[in-house]
Image (cartoon, rainbow, N blue to C red; front, side, top):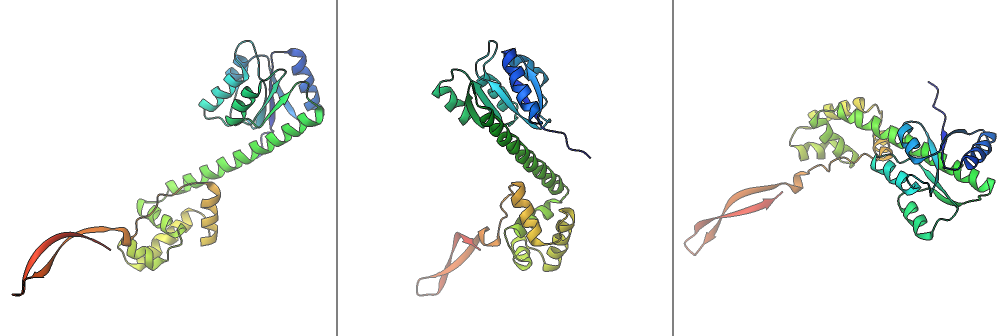
Length: 239
């Protein structure tokens, strides 16, 4: 299946600027889509399309910062390059803190712009790859039974089968069966592959309980007095 090509989305209310940017990028073999307003871009924006955003800071309807905020609120982390003819330091700080890749001042040099676009597209590709891997791992984990998920968490922490059996209060043979099923469902052949897959995906597993951390309420007796009598005292024992 062919991969969807990355697109450089250009949002600027100045038609001459849009044409100049598009001409430069197309000459460098980039795919572009132009929008004359923030409202037009947001109305047609598809977050599933790979690419980055060249965004004018000051526009009549909504500012570039408003567009950035709208994308963030929608859960879209598309890389943004801000373009401004008179942006303040405060505005650039706000943009960068909100995740902008770059903040360029018009007129911008061709090489500087192309370099910023290349960096933004690389970041977008890395983010999408990471998101895709995380989704795959989450889907595989969803196929595990509750007990298999417990075993997975212990295995990733480096616990041996015998230790896991003790932690979960079962026998070694049962843990071996669960572990084999985990490896099959997670589609890995070795412990190293499993640990690497979980780490690379960024999926956080629930920390497994261990037998040494369990608390049990017990009653125990201690001798009182010289006659050897005893007295029952309530307490908590840690195993």
